[in-house]
Image (cartoon, rainbow, N blue to C red; front, side, top):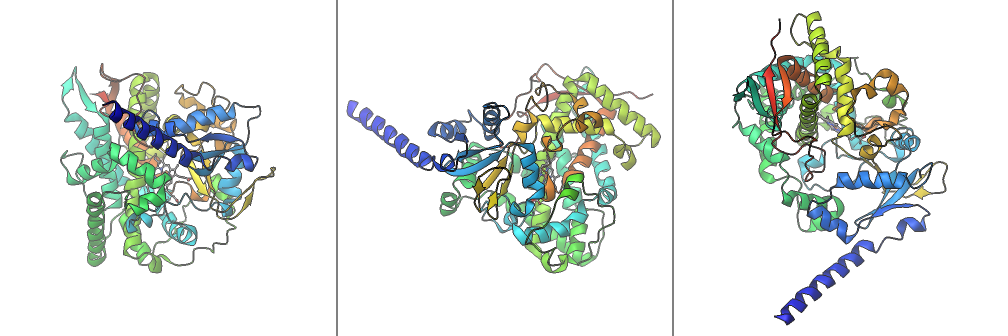
Length: 533
Ligand code: HEM
């Protein structure tokens, strides 16, 4: 028995030592280049990630805090060894602007992830270089305010169905007890179904809707998925050799099958609708035109697209063959489902816990609705300034994407330093850390939408808020996401008074399994119908 025990201990020690050797072999990479080290992944980090004691979100934040407090002023950038891969973390806001916008030509791409899935690989999220530029140029006109206005009816129908869905829940003291993730998932599925897939997915009316089941599977993060994703992101060669795939075949086949059929149907019947699928059909026919309402934000205007990349080299007609088209609709799910869902879950929770804020949002929605005849209309939503502040504050506290990443595509000398980063170097921008930096946002844990008044925003560096990224490769779906969220929250507060229940955890608990910020499952809230006079 002692012999067996000894053998086990020796094996464990050997594995530990081999792993340690493997993980730390490149650790001199940054010191050799005179770059201060932010952190290096150790065996313990790996263990804590696998056992969910640590999350990538928590790590980034903690190291940002530690790193930026080492000196005053803090270092502008530092090196990370991320499971043997050297990564540069940039913490200085001017340098971040330089990378995301002014020197964008050096940082066009993101970390290459071999998804080994034709559909996933072809989304605008993952494409690189010229092909990314071509696809993004064709898609951009689909995300303007003008197009959001055309899609408003779809948002509104989902808002009305949301109210009915909540009302169908059991009551306690006249209020409906709701698991917020469930109703929010059903709302976001129906919005995506209507706008991106051109179909009524019926999730708000039918809890057993097939589409909803698949969406739940897509966002369900099992332990196996956590481990699999760590390998795909950080040990990509190994992941490829053993054939790990980011998306389960069942889910992939379901969505791509539906999209293929919907696209075929639209093209053969000639039916026209106000949705994203229609815009893709127009792009394929080379007919998707700018409607003259594109409004680049200040940062996009700033951007110098002086890359080797030519202006979009091909029209939608040549470019948007089947896979590429399907991929762009599919990206609504992968990029837009959990992100908007998390935002709405946090919104409902924070409004329940901060009644004063809820009443302010309610008053604003009510006043705006009175001006448009007691209905939630496009203009009602456009006028909601306090709502805009509320959403910014939620995304500051809980940005779904905690870090931005860029890949250096040609050698880059960091301005005002003697450090040159090489081609293919991954650069990390710790959005979550910046959002919680007390030097930028005093008392950062406090939820306070007033931080985002025009006056208060003007006092901060414009790159201190990075929830949607910045520059030419920022979130293409930003206007869509904001619009969807505003419509949903307007329906939440106009029709219901939201409160916590004895089961609601205060403060909120974050789901540590996932790579993005979202509340712990089964968050219960009470929605009491409001009486309007
Ligand atoms: C609250 C909701 C959302 C948040 C916070 C969010 C955030 C982000 C962030 C941080 C990025 C990376 C930006 C960068 O690297 O600079 C991104 C990229 C992207 N997002 Fe979103 N997103 C949201 C919703 C959506 C929706 C609804 C869509 C639907 C179309 C979408 C589509 C995309 C795409 C396609 C990209 C990649 C763009 C490119 O590489 O050119 N997002 N998003």
